[in-house]
Length: 239
Image (tube, rainbow, N blue to C red; front, side):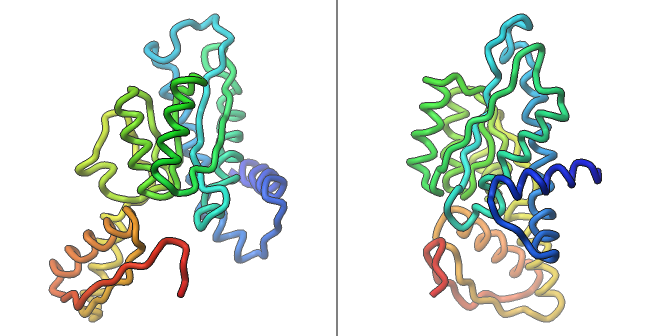
């Protein structure tokens, strides 16, 4: 508990080179605490015989993090994902069946083509066993498809589209934390029933935005509200 948080804060400051005020740090820790949990899950499936075939092998088990390292999701993923995975590996003992655990991380730029290219290269050429994160939902869905084809595990810890467990569900993926169905039915339903029954959507123009708009529209209408319209705005713009 407290020891984990203390170590996390020290590692995160070192990784990012930045400091946070007390309120900002509290919010940041809340957002990233789930990374510590899912990092632990990354080690568990690797004990399966289909993935680790010899306890005596010194070949490392490789976890690949495809993250947003420079865009709008850097602060809720990015370097923090690497730190969380390091902490989870340390708590797990540093190895699986005598094999060391190695972390790779790359910037997927929130682009499906970049994510797909890195994922294939890591699996085919570098022997990566598990992929995680994904940042934007569009990138994550592309990663999920590669992992389906390659029969590799994908831990979805950043993207939030409900399509990960809906129409594009994969037997090789686990979607951790929130998704757009939960966001839509929690917030959308509650606000509509509280009197906010007229909605207009300014939607992020990529997979997450489309899923959130779709799921929220359905929740609003089911709660007796009405949707007046919608427009789409490119990711990472504020004007």
